[in-house]
Length: 415
Image (cartoon, rainbow, N blue to C red; front, side, top):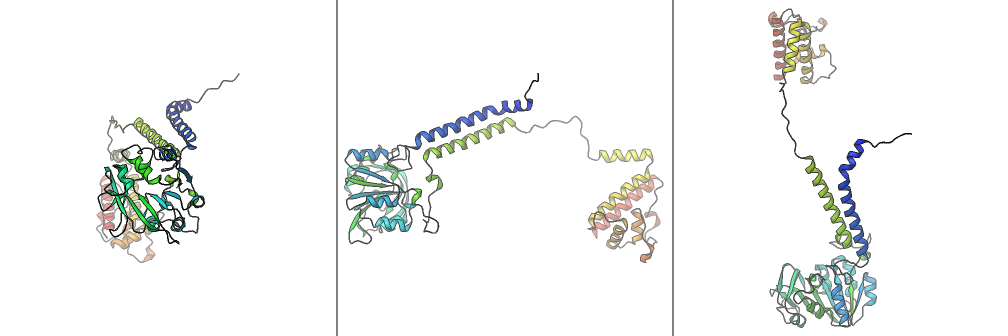
């Protein structure tokens, strides 16, 4: 009968990782479950079918209680099919549409258009006299205008974009400082291709209509007054199906990819990022800082050289010591002279002689070799005989050899 035992290393690794793995699995499964449970009922921001905080389901229910039939559309084609001359049109995220799509939508016969946080392109098409005027800090504002829908609603907490219109136009600016406001109504906006005009409302504080803020101040009253003037209301929420295809015109500022993802999926991704960051932090803390350990003995770098020299001295191995000195000098000269590592002694000697002005025979004997006399160079050294040594007979000669080799190397470096 054979027995099986687990590898101790595998068991140790499992014990170390089981808690982080369990936490990561719980977070991932929780995010997936949340996405599945909320995926059917949730939509994007300002979606009348979304019960999430950025959605507008509460406003849609209030409108339906007042007898307004709210129809949510997701494509430009379905929106145009449901519009007539007695239907209010609400457009969210106008910046997702191209100029061509905006102009097509503007030709629809709807007598009242409400643009939620429109950009400059949408205003140019629907309300030419209205232009963006920057963002406003969150605060509660009074209407500050004579628009009945605003005066009946009273104060509203606004945040987001603001707009302005020239004094010569018939536009009414509300919830601002007199020159710009979070709500601008243009009562005589032209309908392209028609002699008729329409009412266009530019709402810069669309967050006031969301489930999260509808109950604050007069937000609900203002939303009902603006959107509940007719029995039919088409709420257009552009979808990826309306995005331009390759080869067609595209918006100057395309929507962010994250804006196209369902909110539960974005929440799950954020949870995953946080979990990974926490796991990395936990692993880093477990490793701890680097600890320095005092060594029992500190060995100097020159200890090896000095020890080897003492061994040579005791063994009277002067020839081996001289060969080591010459070999090291040849290696350094080869690098200084730019020669191949496999260059022979004659090549090194000739190059060093050419660099320093010494005869090649002198350099060759100093490095432990000779040079062919057929080169025409004199074999007689120009320096005193005491400074040229090719045979080491005692310790003093070994020291002189080391000095001569060092002198040669310094001459090459300075040349």
